[in-house]
Length: 143
Image (cartoon, rainbow, N blue to C red; front, side):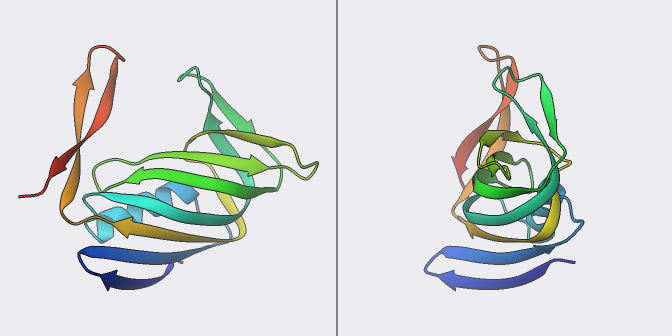
């Protein structure tokens, strides 16, 4: 169950979202972006905790599972109904930190509060980049 408040200032729109225990962090963000037709946004703040997680390391291939309670120390990146690219840093109980590319499977433990700034004058598209071998995000001016 997502709790949400929407506010605007100038052309920017802010989505203030609270996730609850058991929700998948990335799936929830994607669902909000699709439901609100967010064409380009940025995570301004993301704090809370997870009971387990999945993050991809810098190899771009290996997904690591975290099977313990962790605090979300940082959550940032770009979001849209088209594609999300998010990185997360997690603080473990022993105060060590692990981080990487956010994957589906990060499950909220008690709560997570997220603020997304929507930029309605821009949209995110995806384009094949032969140099990286990935479909990469590109930013375009909205018409």
